[in-house]
Figure 1 (cartoon, helix red, strand yellow):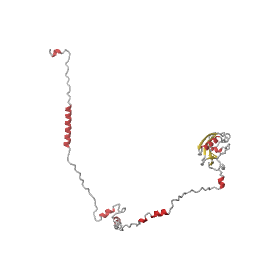
Figure 2: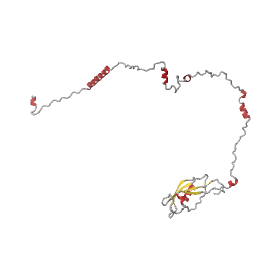
Figure 3: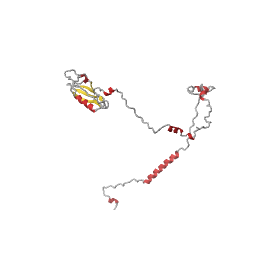
Figure 4: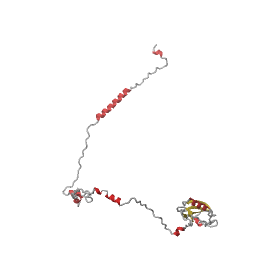
Length: 271
């Protein structure tokens, strides 16, 4: 059977497909090595290997003053000629050429002379000290008896000032209606003042009481705070209100100055 008879009428022959050839890895590596070798050859072949020579500089022109007095003229232009010691100054020979120091010998020529002390004299001072002191007598220092600086009458009767209540601020302008008799407080040390901030209503009753400063004794502070709530002042409804007070309220401070009675005071002490 021929080729023409095997092809159907109306059909076309397919064109043969041409696939590109692929280079192997060895060929690529050979090309890269050849190119690298060529680059190295160019680098080493074109490199200038002549040694570097230092460049010589020609000496420039200099100016000099000719004549015999050129050295002295240049010395006068030195700024340290009169400010610092200088050979060309008016006292250069004295400053820059000090006289030599005289040669003195510090070696001691005399032989050392030792202090003579006999063997029998060793410990003589200690023996004399022991012989002249008696150690069996023990001396005891007794403190002197206390001497009272108060007379007999002053020691028997001791008076104390009573405690005092002071009012400060706008509240001092209002009249206190409650009689206050503060007792003295028994305490080993002196007590400071108890300061209470008090706010009073128009009718004279306390509205608020706050302790600002303590006296150092809790019982005294508690007594002062309780006494503060029992105080009564005059009413200001029909009167002029004190200056510096809010409408209906008057502010002030109560200072309790305590009279302290020491706990070791005599029995006949009068508070």
